Length: 353
Image (tube, rainbow, N blue to C red; front, side):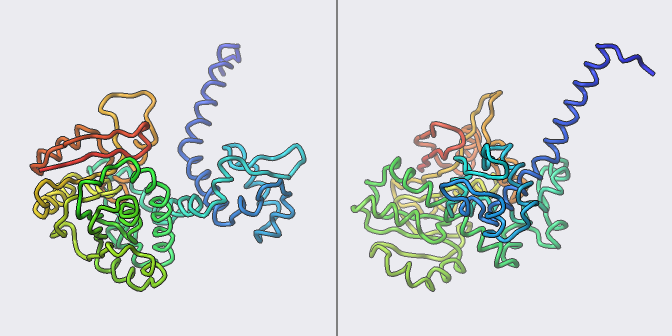
């Protein structure tokens, strides 16, 4: 046996530290994610409110075992979710958990915690090997996340609420930073419930028509929402269709966090379909994350979003060089790039013919 000299002890301590670090990275991410999702589902942050509250009271309010709840909150406190006060087993909200108490933030956390997301990542090594994702095996014979959600109405509702929450948060900022004043007709492609195009119309009284374009099933579901429909701008119009095949004629097309769902081949098809319908002088506004073209030791969280898009739907986050390649393939030109101040914020790339 090797003698336990100071040098040997130091090396073993360093190796133990590396071991725990790798364990935390490989398994801890899942544990922390599931713990956070559990807190969101139990709505613990909302139950705490503005004043500290004991685990005993919280357990009664959210309906769970007090000891397990304490252990959950103790662990989450280590990553900034909740804070245990000087009084034992009494917790207060932090900035992060205060956000989690809001429905829109909570919806986003619950969406990332859907079982299909976890199942999809089981086969990520195979994706890296073959260069594309295939979820058929882990999703029970269903090839895509979108088709899987159609078979799980409750999960689809969670996903829809999360996307609406994201749109509601981003819309005011994106509309304020974008110029729509020169357009008569603006068309939001993949606009779901029409939140974004409605905001564009409110901010631009000179626009004559705003079109919300999405799949026919989405548009039909929108028509059933009487409360929503009563509040729509008279200039608002909805059209169902497939943007791979045909889109309405317009002066400006909006693609908000849409093309990152698709690989380059599919994105080129979508943009070519739009190009064939563009009115003279029309533009395409593409809102997506924009990665740096250069190596960066302090990479943003978008590189992880890029892997997520790859695994879930064979999509990708793009650099400017990626967009320039797509412009060549479509015959479109990049007129202007409006970079966000940070990579984890949405940038704007404007295409013209």
